[in-house]
Length: 338
Image (tube, rainbow, N blue to C red; front, side, top):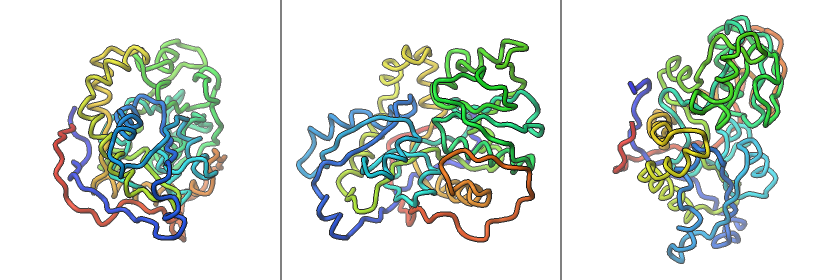
């Protein structure tokens, strides 16, 4: 696959650790960690729970639970999780602290985030957004506005519903629903001419962003609540990612049948379509995306918002001040992705 975005320079962000009494109180306590059940998360949690229980006494004890990306952000806000792999747009909204250089990202086509059009993009008036998505929902609106100057009315596509459940001009699907042996359920619907699922055009949103900006894209990252000490957890999360990336073939062999993929298709998705490191280019991409979502007023809520076509003006204030990775230092990596 030809590279569409600048290469990652393998840098590791320094982390801002809380120093207050609450952090000290929680040091050594069991950490409640939330992740996503999607295929793209498997390399990030490979052996995480079992490795934690068998590691040194200094390692964090953790409980690992799974949920939808949008719900993980809500649970972090509610305090029922301490650390979660959350949509990057929720990092912006909540001002969460990003920990480690681990992410779910891409440098080109991502395969599992697709926008299906029943009409030309510039003619879209209604946009149905997969209810399990938040970052991709914002990305869809950013690309439509920045490239075509439109702000469609948006509506939720309930979790578990296919594209045939709506007659919106464009439909966003993410995760396992967007992939499959022939591109997922949405692709099969697209082949049924004249049906509510008949589509003229399909955007891979990772590819569209990378071509438009020349930057990679970060969909999700590990984030922590204030007052939660992650000094011992961060190396565990990084090690889990490294184990997962080193064992992509085994993960693909185990997961492919569950997702209707052949093993080579699954391995190609995990190895060629996804990227798992935050480097300088990813940091720049996150800052760019934060500015664009903030200027469109997409950071004030987690729910889809209806918009009337309007002229765009830059935001007069900065988006929510999430603590993104910064002050990086170069580190060697034995992994050679893409």
